[in-house]
Length: 182
Image 1 (tube, rainbow, N blue to C red):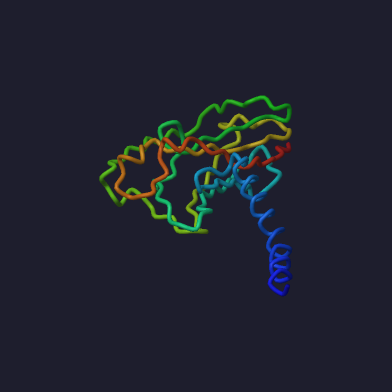
Image 2 (image 1 turned 90 degrees about the vertical axis):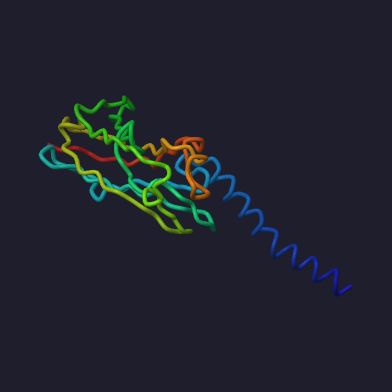
């Protein structure tokens, strides 16, 4: 009888935790900013910018797993790198920048120094500082911004394992809203 009561107590105590854990895993699986153990986050230190100012954005690529993940050590901007900036106006229309960096990330997969071991709960990051004029955000109003992260290297070509490669696809950061004021 005592064993039965003890068993019921354990089921009651552990049951909700298991449900919450499964719910958190399900939520994480549906989160476009999280994939295969990586999460990309975008932060803007300011919410309002004057048209004469430069926008500053912080991008963080985080390992949210309990084990190491290897990633390319340089976070460059553009189609030939690993980060793309997306801007939309308040109506949701994509804004094409007038000019934007297009880093040429050329990496020898055998160069072990080109890759970073990202331990659990650690991140690497970069900043973007850009003229609002070149980003085509020079009109007053609200804009949403998000970042796309991808790898151009196949994980099978890299000695470090597990490597987050091209076959892992793309992850998208959270949306950040900023307002351009006169």
